[in-house]
Length: 360
Image 1 (cartoon, rainbow, N blue to C red):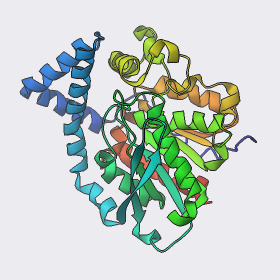
Image 2: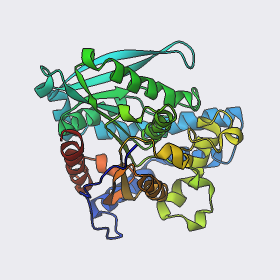
Image 3: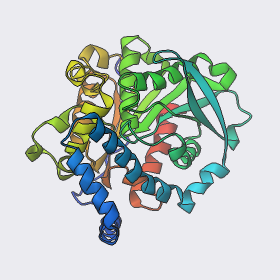
Image 4: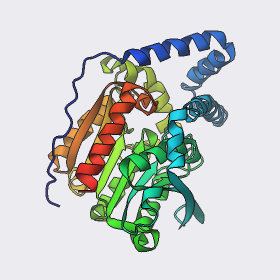
């Protein structure tokens, strides 16, 4: 593949300070913790379980992990500012048949901006939700993805891929990969322009996207995708390095991330440790050169900032990086909170990306 050409659209000034509004939210969270001994007890128990590895403790851990995440999703989705996405889109669904891990139909929610209902050559925005690849669902991120569909003026395909630990690597990645292939193959009947297929997802969903990019590269299918845009993605095994060399945010989450990779996502951690499906950041230079054109969106105070930065450097050297965007003052997925400066910046970034790299 030929080298892509960056338009160098983003050069945000990084100040080394978390946005004041996020600091205030963190203070409110700490106050809520003090008022809710049960929540604090749950988090303390999760910290204990991070150091254990047996079926019972792993089952307890994932149950607590999923449970403690639910209040944030409910709080975020209750924001009035997200309602316009539902108002301005039509929601349908499709099922994509797969056979790589038993006979299974992958459920995909489809959000079509009402302005595009009568068009037949629309861009496709294929999304993988976050949650460490072990939590959340397509329905959990529906309001946000509906809004992104409107902002980017594309039909969004929100993929409900199977989660770990019930479904192990690489079968969770294959769920998403099969949806990408299905949308490409059935573009005409779906009213999609096959030359405008975009992949995206945040955090654990970003990992799913990166794993799919590896799979596409291995099969010489990178040209099926106009743009891949993983957002604050999980990339590699940096969490297994010395915490003393990490940023504050990386150090805070590294034990949890080790647990997720070793005992949740991996089918056999030691056997898969060098696999670019478990750790996409270990993809070879030959594979990187076959990646779709890529934009990585990171956050200044994200727990994966080091991984995102060095992987972006490798993709750039391979000639496949269009942009590496760092959202200033933001923490992990804080830029999804409506009304914050980080969210305003993120929305403008994806609008610009759609205009300059997709609809051009």
